View 1 (cartoon, rainbow, N blue to C red):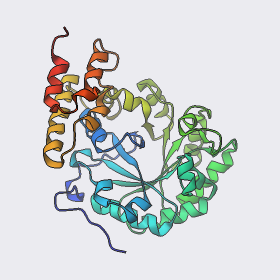
View 2 (cartoon, rainbow, N blue to C red):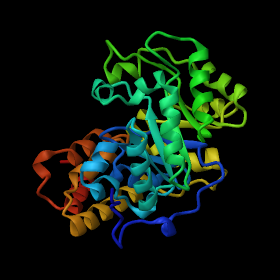
View 3 (cartoon, rainbow, N blue to C red):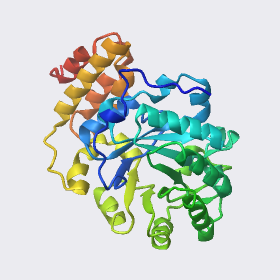
View 4 (tube, rainbow, N blue to C red):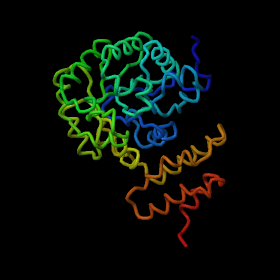
Length: 341
């Protein structure tokens, strides 16, 4: 099976930014249809240190699809992790090798997604019922890459709330060479709930992640699920090694501008919403010139940038107005800044 390697202008290992020692202290979750490369470019304008994750990419997409389309990213996005979905060790090894060749800083295995489509592929959260298989998958990836292989998982399946279940899963998989676990602190209900309901209905049980850290002090344990404020994140970081943020980070991206100072001891950001918007327009112009990418699939990711500010509704309506799609991005920017009639 031949590898598809990055082209000469694709990001590679030599272009990586230095990865901080506390790599998993804060991260933005992999979110399907949301955390594409345009979204991640926005997030990197707001935080220089936070670890970013791709959307889940299936092994089938990399084995049989357009590899560059799935793996290309902007060099500015580092540190950056590739999340894979799959359950065949050989396929995952091949896909992980591709990810390392393309310059990703981490390969993450999805053992947390509860969607029926993912279940039909026999991966995602249902893999928690097969810890030995997950261990085989991890070992296959660890053997072919020199970047960390991590696992994102739930704390239980359906209504089984036995701590022993997740403890034994982590213990088995860690023996295969995984030393970092991102713990979504809810069960995954495989039947009867939509993916959205699976993020809201099963109760959050952070204490399970805390117990995992106590039982496996040598492992890196990051917690995910329901965290929406800086204070909540700081509380979790008193107990575990990291926190992964999802929906709140996407819908209120300006929150990310606080993170480097709050969680990494960096100087407070001097960026403004206006300067970030300007940089995004410049990015839209580059993407249009280089790849023919329209501005609107990029702009959709910044619609929450003015969340909570006066005039944000009008601003958001302009950037999402389908009647303006034929205009250049800078003209749309000018419309947002024009006095209201």
